[in-house]
Image (cartoon, rainbow, N blue to C red; front, side):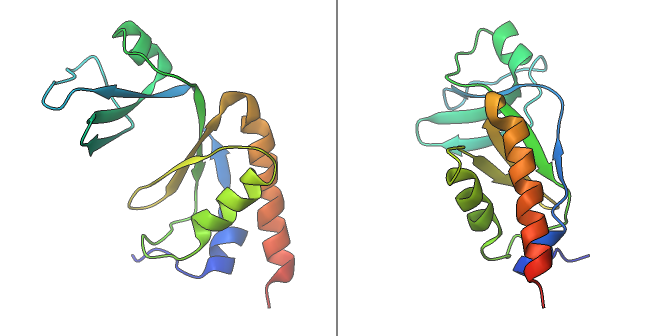
Length: 138
């Protein structure tokens, strides 16, 4: 099943869900394994090292440094990786309220990492954006 590409449909049906737990971004050197004790929700290979997105407890247990703690919001709509403007609209809405967002797109859904202290506000803003998009649809 192909993901949704229509921007208005994506916005009106995004259904944000605040996931349990706190998450952090850590970096380990290239080629360094991270072992079975770590179960990242995401990783990305960069020139400087391998970025791991981990539950905070795992990072702390492994003595991995991190600089900020995030909440994870999953957008339940099945978005296409080729959708245009979806994350831009979300990032713009959150930025207008001083909320940073680190988005991660996966095959089925988009996931937003926002500062823990602003998670509830971010959820409210996403619901507001969905409602605004719903009333502006043709």
